[in-house]
Length: 90
Image (cartoon, rainbow, N blue to C red; front, side, top):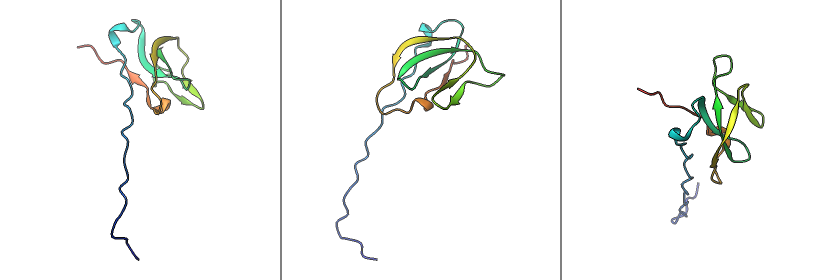
């Protein structure tokens, strides 16, 4: 196997982090925040059969009310990785 003396460097570009929601702005009943495939943020209320919302094809699978949060997902982030549970209040 021949390895050249000069190997080109691959530049890794850091992807943006998923924006964390400001829970002080969340509706009282919101248990989760996530982004839809369109990039809009939503507050999600409650669990589904004791389980958190989960990805179902092209949207979040949940049976409870949701409300737009006003957040927008930056380009380059997979919406399926954005589910955030409300932090526990101590």
